Length: 63
Image 1 (cartoon, rainbow, N blue to C red):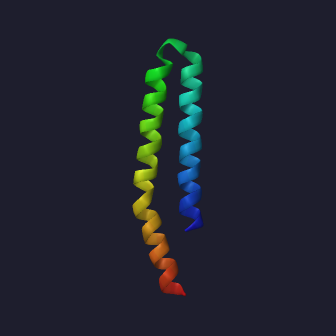
Image 2 (tube, rainbow, N blue to C red):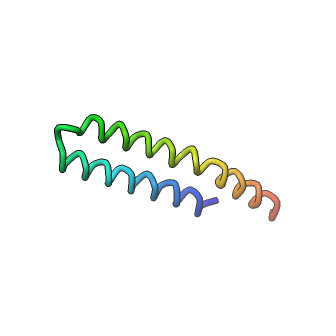
């Protein structure tokens, strides 16, 4: 379970870093870039829910 949470956190940090770097490099499009970055972060969390639920279920089975 901890591994899945770390993958989600890493994905969020990378998405924020990419969006921040892109917004810094092209300030005129910063609003649009950050909007896409937020969308990527939401997608990262949503895609991580199913693996996280499976990991929690497997942890409960092994106890």
